[in-house]
Length: 382
Image (tube, rainbow, N blue to C red; front, side, top):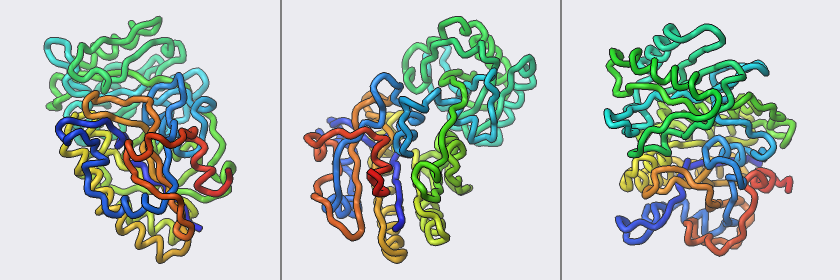
């Protein structure tokens, strides 16, 4: 048996006037997804446990089969693991976004114009040269997503994710560590002034100490692999011993290589992997941007460029089971994440489920299950 987990990041949404009162899932043309749903088990998954922030760190941890209420310590330490960083107990990691803040103090772009990796790394290295030392380290990641490692006493702060501030006043951190964090953010303005980037400062948030998680092999008895362009998801793979497959053409943006992700999944499964996770960020980015057209297009790309060929390839490999769900909702009207339960689909190549429609409305009356329990359900360990 082969297993696949498909994560269209943030694809769940709310009805929109621009789409005639439909959600992007209802408006998108998804022939393969519709066929799978017609013979699948459908339902709603609480991927964000009550009291935890509705982020991709929490949601993807749930999807990977780990209870965030037990293992989640913060977003940044997961991303630090993706960069090969092993934090000591006396160190805390912060997510360090390159952002654009307007002259009026408004958060213009939480992604700093989506800089290229090379230009972004040069900016972070320049900031490390200006601020590094005395327990501070800045490490370049991907595009606008980077990491600050700091002494443990810097952990006590309340920080707002920059994607929650789009079009709003960019209110900085509060709490005991706020002055230290604000100094880094203020200094970054001078360093980035001559960088040529659209980003004009860094934004610190998502702090935490590195979690200790059992390996996926130990928890589920399966050899697993994944593909993603997002360090957060890579970091979960590193922390749980799931192999991370590199794909240079995976961008984390609308132009990501859908076919490439499909093909590396099928290749890994053919080469002996038992389970493969395919993560695509495009739907989430469109949600944050409030771009209705791109969110619908990203869902259609999922269907046409991943799912269609994926099902054909899985059929050639033998029996299979597939789980599809987002890690949270990212409503276009809100441009940020919400903790609402999301629709899930679980389909078996040989055994038909009750079937239905994979949309928010299609599962609205179905039971809600804890998101972290779906992995065991997928692999037959419930």
